[in-house]
Amino acid sequence: MAKSIMQTEKECYITGQTNNLHKHHIYFGNPRRRISEENGFWVYLCGRLHNQSEDGVHGKNGHELDLMLKRHCQMKYEETHSREEFMKLIGKNYLD
Image (cartoon, rainbow, N blue to C red; front, side):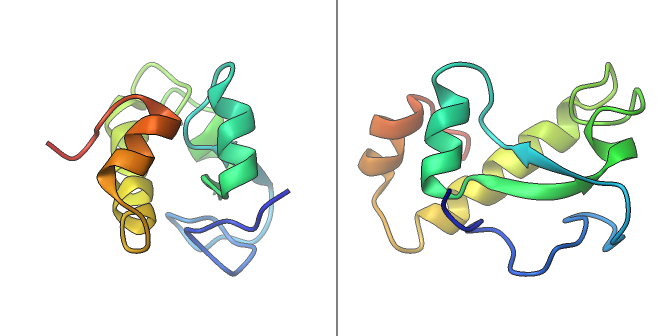
């Protein structure tokens, strides 16, 4: 398991909360979950912002949060890699 490229502390990426944390793979579904795990494309989210409410990334109101995380992750990755490398891994550009 690779360390998260997004954060170093074990706390909710959005709220800073340190309890009820869930590991969220930013690009999920097969095979993207494995790619996320191998490349550190994950963050900790509190349960409410993960899958325990409609506002979580997996809830019906979570689309904007999901897109924000995908964009932040791609920007972070592209600090040390090319857009082409990102596209080869994920197959989609979230920044344009």
